[in-house]
Every structure is written in C-alpha cells, then in structure tokens.
Length: 303
Image 1 (cartoon, rainbow, N blue to C red):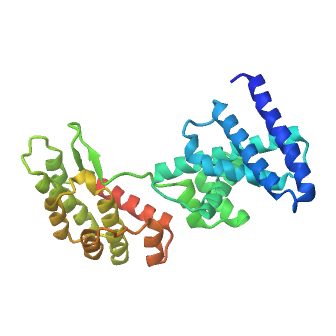
Image 2: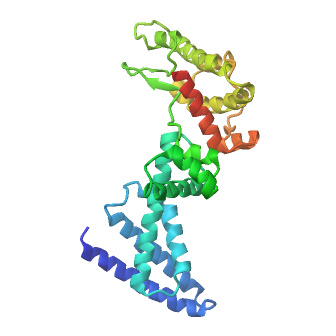
Image 3: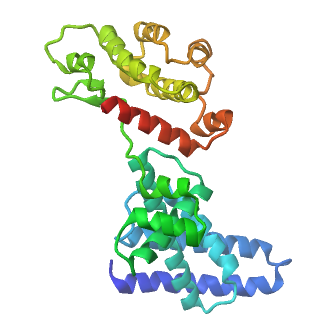
C-alpha cells in the first residue's frame, strides 16, 4: 500500500478527531455530532485496516474487536494532537489483533477455549517467560519453579500454558480418506484395514467401542465428565457420521454415551447441546479444564 494513500487516510481521521474534540467541549448540545463523528472515525480506521497488508485477511472476524479498540482509544485519548491520536490508535489496533491471533493459535493448537481472564493470565505467563529467557537459558521447567517462588504464579496455570496438550480428534482420515478412530489397538488396526468389509453402522460401532474401552479405564469422576463432553462432541459433529437413524441407534448401545443428552437431542428439535462453559459449570471446573481432559483422553487412545 502506497504510504501517501495511508497518509491521506490518517489525515481524514485527524480532521474527524478535531471535530470530535471540539464537540466534547459542549457534550450536552453536541451528543449527535459526537456519535456520528465516532462512527465516521471507526469507518475510516476500518478502511485503513483493510489496506494494510500486514493485517490478516480474515479481518471481518475481528471487526468487533477493532471497533471496540477504536472507541476505547477515543475515550482514553480525548485531548491528543491528531497525528498522535492516529498513531496511538493504529498501534492499539495492531496490538489487539496480534493478541487475538496469538489467542486463536493457542486455542487451535490445544482445543482449549479460554475466557478473557484466562487469556490475560496466559499472556502474562508468556511475557514473564520471555523476560526470564532474555537473561537465562531457555528452560520452562526451571522457569516454573522460579515463577512459583518469585512471581507468585500457580503451578497448574504454568503447566497448562507452558506445556499445552496439543489437540487431536477422536477420528482421523486413513490413507484411503476414510474416517477412523485414533486408537492403536487390534480393533483399531482392523478399522484401518481398507479390505475390511463392514457396513457404515458396524464401522462406527467398532470405532465407538475403541473409545469406550479407553473410557472404562478412567477414574470415576473423570468418566462422568468425559461422558458428557464426548457425547456433546459426537452429537455436535454428527453430520459427518451420517446422521441417520441407524447411526443414532448405535449410540444407545455404547456405555460412555450420556443417554440423557442423547434422548434430549433426539426428542427435542429445539434442544441445544451444552457448551463447554456449561459443562464446566455443571462439574465446577473451567471450560479449558474440560478441553484438557478430553484432549488428554484422546492421547491415551493413541498410546
């Protein structure tokens, strides 16, 4: 993007910012002017974000974040020089988008869906670790002990964010493009055998049996949580298993499947599967903890 074109865009923002500042001198009589000017400033900055190549192409997904950042900057910097306001706001937008990208990458890698407060904690730990390795050798285990004693961090938080468990799916595609369970048991090897002549229903049943065997080996408290979480995951993605009555009937035969959720899912067209947050609330843990439990369970199937 030609720098001169951006300069012109920033100049328009600067002019609007002056209008905004002047209108603030008499808020009571200029409420409509203030509101309309804010919208115009948001619109101009939005155009700028679309032009800057360093920004991600999926900008629309972050539109709410961008608008919120601009409005916060207007509240925070009501009396700056136009050029300084433009620089501060543009930098804030870049930083927010960079943080959002970091969060998305973490969630995609781990399968964890973290709240804003959890994400702030994660970023605080990441920042502390970067400072630590700037003067020490890179050693996450040593940092954890240091951070607990000198920085007051919680061990569980440090373990979660510094050593995240990479997410995986209960089902993967084999070399023939067929979806099969991740389990590496004799049953699973049969599933991976392309020459196996089975109906879709029997194949699905075999895959679920592999999961069920691993589930039966879990502790009782974990089994209850995993039952709900995995049932929700299965039903949420049920379209890829065929979604027909034959496949549904298989689920009734599997011990780990939460039958109450299954019944509600089948009998009530308006039934909404619980979110990870709702599952976490039910068992008194966070939604990230739910994600970790499921991901670690999947890992045990692979082992």
